[in-house]
Image 1 (spheres, rainbow, N blue to C red):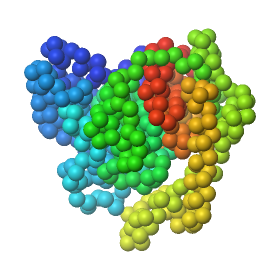
Image 2 (image 1 turned 180 degrees about the vertical axis):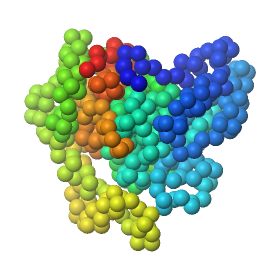
Image 3 (image 1 turned 45 degrees about the horizontal axis):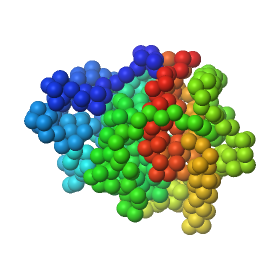
Image 4 (image 1 turned 135 degrees about the horizontal axis):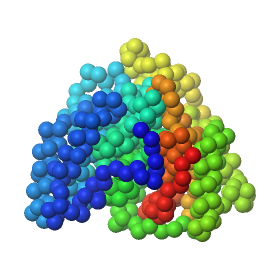
Length: 453
């Protein structure tokens, strides 16, 4: 299949919802479209760990009745969604693609965001694949646009399920680009909010100081509706300001966007560079000023810091020492060679290594915040090119490390393609200005999509 950003579209629940009260379609009919896509593509894509169609149909029927009665619970009533298999869903195992959890008991409670979406009438369609512990061996999933390519990771199945039209929305988590990167590779929209703004508790979280709950979806409206429901029902992480659950922001043209290179630009293929440069020129013609890192010392210092993120990021993996070093001692055969490598590195870290990493992260965040009144946001590619061919891996995080470490709201905009495959644009805003970033994202999406390389 050839991906064309100008024509690619996925079933949007928010678009379908507008007709429900008038009897034009229903949550059950929408679900059946998703099931038809599942039956057509899941055998080859392998996006799910598990799913329960009987329960999904019962939930869709209940939502259909509420819409017919004029009493929907929320904007997401009847929305089928996928849950990345690092988060808990009551009655299902949380496996995290690891033999360690193969014999674990089903979760007793839903993760906070799952409970929130259920409170609004949405229902779990299934659990989507992820990498081992969200950080090691890849999931057994393939890119829906080319079954010889990676779908990215670690929110692997979530991106692949939306790109296959099996779901309008799926949840993900991001430490090093694990929401934005697979969204770029699979050609779907995605949103990583301000760190802590959406409650991510309930499941396996090996990197709590940088992990974000994220959403991947057919449209930004589907994503924002779900984010609002989560924020209203369960807020953010304890001690963090929750997402401002304002109505869907209207599209708004950004006036000034800072261009970022990070370490990703030197690793990007020429075709991807060229198509991004062409897209930037189009923005300039539409009146958006593009600020280069050399514009001032503040921009230069920030850009330089983003190129050095990798120097401290792995030292934050001090956090994976407990309980996984002890777990490995008990059953070393239940950890892959990749995970053994991560744990070996974590075991060598000292508390001073971790302290310095946190200080470097805080410095990067400070440099970012200093620019909040200078530009509307930051723009770069979301990946170094199309998803790689060969055995499914996770893609590369080189454009995503800085936005993850900063903790600012970030989106993938499925605007470009190269070699007939998706390539996303990464848009990053400023902490707690999530709605503003979404407004700019919607404008960038609505202005039209760039030609393909």
